Image (cartoon, rainbow, N blue to C red; front, side):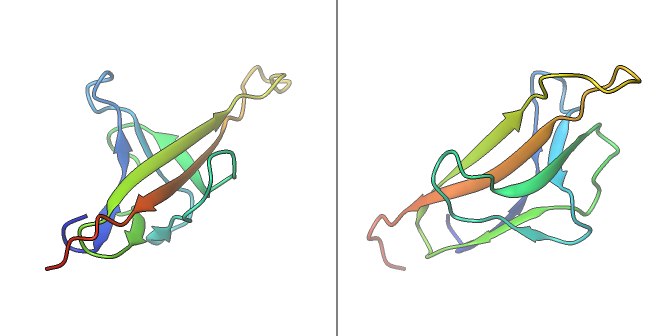
Length: 101
């Protein structure tokens, strides 16, 4: 993490960047530092034109190594209209490299 702060969305290169994950909220969403298995920040999935200006945000010590974790919970059953509401969570873990600016 070069500057100590980062805003981002998650995109799929396999889908030609037409699939993106962004915060459910209307502002920059601070994602929690968490252990794998915790829920993390609530997120939505959309196409290329969706989620404009909705970014995840994190802040850590400069030169830290940050790993982004994404969880997808698939429902066991679909709704009466045949759709399934997938839940997505985003969180991160961090390791201090000990480097100083």
